[in-house]
Length: 458
Ligand code: PMP
Image 1 (tube, rainbow, N blue to C red):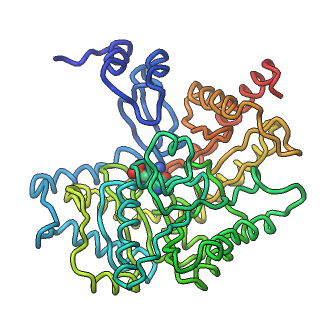
Image 2: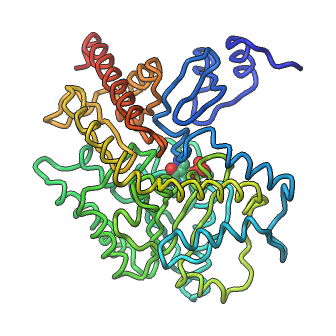
Image 3: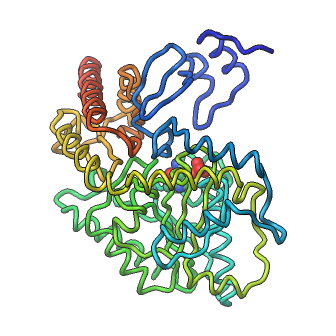
């Protein structure tokens, strides 16, 4: 079969054969997907020749930007030499060894060991088993409950989806036992009238403490959280939140898991989000930015105090065919070389991060915008019919989707979560491109506001 050439033909073939993730494929087929054909830097090109600014780094992963020959070459070289071998049965290979050692250097000091996976979801499934194994070996088998947060995202497999706090996902899945969800630190959406951000942050953090007490510390294994909830809408917690969580985790016999699938590898202006917020995780979950999305790869870093116990325990009955895939490890190593050489983490912290934040904050003045948080290179715009009263739209999600569609028409990829627009551009974005991104976001807001007015929604 020869692949058809026109956009219409490609769309028809896609509609005939492709079931899309997180999509209403029937509705999508009626509308037709955008077909992305190539990309360079922060720019995507579609099959009609439109150049689109990728404000989402693909799915929060293309940190070093598109078109990096160095990564392509590293993968090709590795594939010629050893395209695949496993790490199960008394074997290993150079790319996995080198990457594991490199990650031990880059992550906070308590981490010296990594378990490789193929994705963030697989990493979080791994975490559940590691945590159980840890407490079993310690002869505390009652400690099984993992506390997570509502509106958290930890992946899409049955177990990782259960850890996450997305009820529309739970509704379509078997949900595993021993996961308990507590409140999220979403000040704009969930604070009481008159509560300050710091009061709200403390109150929300203390839900962890009261839940541990209510269920019994002897039954709680771990707390898992994203430093900034990503897929939940880029929820940046109030300043009081993380120090209080860190205190509670220190005082209790539980493991703290930082899911850094989005926040890892520079997104928040440090190598890892836990460094930005000053927490000390026992387990650190990674994927996405580890290869900048050029190859699928994930990993779970395990702190020495946990490893010391696990190593007493004999076999760990878990692993994936592609755990530590050589070509994926080669991509990660080349990606990390770029990040170090170009000082991309420092660039986010000291240059493009503050520059984007200054401009993005001006969007908070727009009549449709309730808040415009930005940390490092990840931010959001909460759309509201009433800024002062922090009111939500009656039909949640309609305005957000409309705004996202306007944004796409303006050749800017922003994502909508409920009525919150979110961005996480590649770490290589230039000042000029940031100007363009913010101008297009403003245009999107104006168009959305005009249409919402016309429909009587504001
Ligand atoms: N954890 C977090 C915080 C994520 O954002 C994601 C993906 N968006 C995952 C886990 C799951 O990663 P994957 O899609 O690679 O399975």
